[in-house]
Image (tube, rainbow over all chains, first blue to last red; front, side):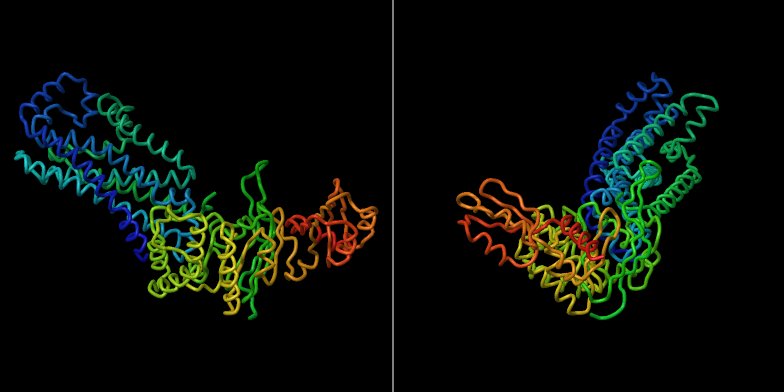
Length: 268
Length: 310
């Protein structure tokens, strides 16, 4: 692995980092702005009290009490929304790893160069993983900077850690999309299935957490959103096993897509 | 021409799909390409030329058979093979949002020795009259193909694999390209060039392989292929056809398939023009058109000639 493909991908994708980072950062600033007003927060908390638990879950919180503190508000609202936006980025990044180049025909030129398929895919994956990390870092820095600028009384490290905690789930969506694109060989189908993966995961998490019983529990466990747990950083219940599980799924998914990409015909 | 095979294909086959939907793209291909030759791989569209090239580049995998380049296995040693070859794809796609220079630098850095390669790329671009500062999306299709040729040749590979390289190039650039191929041969390098244009293959190749419906039908020297060549001749007279001309033409051994339409006569001709010119001189010739036969016609003529000989 020479790192040339990584360097080239990063060089040509810096605008992506900037735009996504600024976009998500702007969302963070908006959430900061709301969190800076105790009246607004308490008003929302009253509103959430009237909501059924499933709807509350959709806002990323298991307990309405979490909304009463600025850090609880920022983490619950921002992290759950950012997780969805990052999933969109991750689907696009997953397609960029190999599928888009294969569809356009550029892959024929690339794979006629002295670089193995495995090395190429690995370098592209690492490059987009770094781009995702950079976007999350930019987002976290803007959100925390906004919080400090607005004199919000909330622990910066908790906010920063809860935003960084989105990274494994973004990697998972990216890897799943890359795997689907490699297996299906049809970009549109891969996009559809990846979107379904994100939406179904989101619904499973919301419904699974709100409803009781074994089936609901299983639904929740099958959702990658349930392993993100932004509020765990506020409540002090963060479990690294959840992050490791997501990373393990990423590893397995990447291994499968690598195996498929190396063994199959290209551009067919 | 230096000795030794550069490309060896043995029983190479490729099928797509399965069951009733199975399509045979390439069947049991045995072919050797020698060091220092320009080998023309000739066949109509859909004959299996691109499939062969994609197999050689390890972009697709053979259903049966094997192949080596430089004595190395195309699958197991693909990275080493790719280091020593240059490739131009028939349907060239490049990064639309990047300039020629950026692409050249990127490809050169993947190949290593970026400085030397880029210097040679600049020379090639100048020779092909290509502006490498423009983004690919702003280049005409001809200029995109020039860029593709620069990328394929800029590291002076031992073997060039070119899939229909001159389509879309203007005649002047085609001439430059032909000169470049001659220089390649003079340096003892090898070119594997696929084409469906007979005249191009005639102009630059030493040997020709004819592919049809996924099967290699013949491998011959260009001279031998040329010997079976014929032309279609169309003669228009100002007034009517001269009396007895059709019978006279039909009796000539070098002329067949004579058809008339008013004051016009069309025929298939082999060999020298002189007997024909003498025959038509009895009338006032308004125009005379000579058409190169299609590849399919050459192919059929070649085989009917073979059958007659046997």
